Amino acid sequence: MKYKALLEQSRQNIGIDFPVSCRGISFQVFETGCRWMHQKLNDDAGERHRNFNSSINYLKYGMIKYGIAFFVFFFSLWQFSRISLFIAPLSIVLFYLVEIHFLFLFPFILDGIENPLWASLKQTYKTGIVTALITVIPIGLFMLYGLLNIRNPFRNWYIGCFAIIIWYQNEVKDRL
Image (cartoon, rainbow, N blue to C red; front, side, top):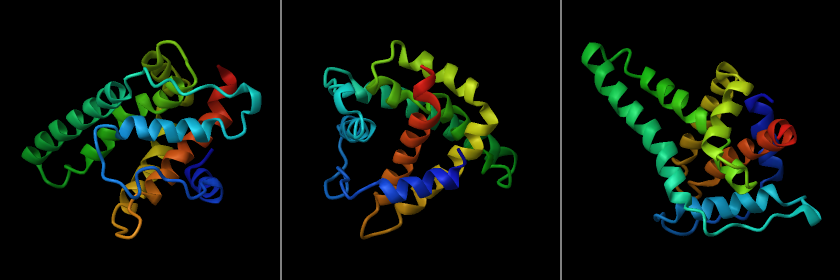
């Protein structure tokens, strides 16, 4: 699916239940977000509903995913800025190039897929690196832009997360 269609479908079906919108962000942000994602993944599951596994260390997976991506971002930003400030924005592309490798990590974890890190890497290549990049970068920028909304800074964030869930449900989940 294209990013515009994913964002539009997400906007139409997101609802109003955003777990972090009124509370401060803490180290529980990944578990809180995963609980919300779990609910969204299972909204239409009926009897196939899978219970949320609170024994999983969601923080660990989040730190792996974003730790690697931010390391690459800051390292490349430092290196590019030493060459020329004009190429420094390429660091954003490198951030997303790493981040897309873990694109479906949390949905895989929530669906109980074994070796979710490896499964996410394989799925990224099945989806296609370029396809993933041209879909995820606009969604990511949409999410970041939303943080500027003082009244509801996380609304775009959740719309973007739900867009990825929709992508997962429509194009990945049935192939597992």
